Image (cartoon, rainbow, N blue to C red):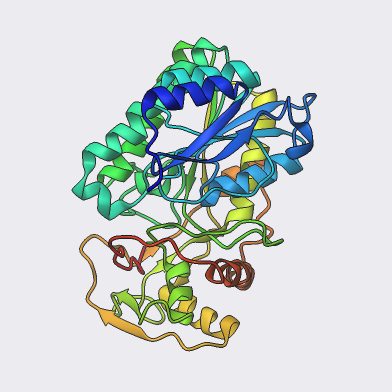
Length: 388
């Protein structure tokens, strides 16, 4: 039986490995994340480039943001607790840790001379937030405040925050612009809106500048196959349709087939994750020139129905995808699409990858690699959220 390390032994190991981060799994040391200053040949790290802390950088959107920051000649430093993802192979410094741990954040800010923060970490499953609101308010608000206070202590005044279209609630009109009323329907959306307000107050009170992105439906994968979407608990439509195509699941559940849309299924705005990542690099550049707080939708203004997604997956994979028709779910609107002209105008954002064919093909290329590897078991499969 393997030896279970106690807290003192862990502290001793850390002391012996100064400048490195030991990562533990099931109380066992699993791997070491090396300090790039001491071991530059192991990671893509240039001491002459600005250092950007990316919270949640091991996740789906985070890993693509990291790749984009590297392409923009920035040094991304990842901190992630790996609660719903595996360790990415992105070639940059990686710290396993929680944002509520002040001593960990202080050490990272001091060691790496952080100059900007991209804050993507948080809990994201809407259904779970209804059952466990305390988890979402702690992870998405309390931990975020700790991050903001750490930034203040270390004089870091540039923040890019990952918010969500969930702040809008039921649409009063479509496409939804940034002036639309914010009336979240669940604790997840509420926590995102609360933290937006907190950031705005910090901007007014302190020397802080921020860009906040309200994403619609992130989809697709890195066009070069370096990153993609694979959660331990998968709730998103496209990867679950792939799981059905790959015979990991029996069928896709479609909630609602009598909406006032062309095929009767709900329409959502899918934006390629590479375009979302590009927006973050553009936002950092903006904060080099402008001060204040800026909020942008990230979407395409064009939606696709659930049935269109399934049909495109069948076309691309050349595999059958059985579906199950279910009644509508309470509160699900027929159409949710973004008006993102503001981001295109002020940031110069071009949506180069967000057509449906590119989204599905890049995602499938990634998933073929991901499915070839052993899946991480989970205790319970999340229910399909096809209409969201």
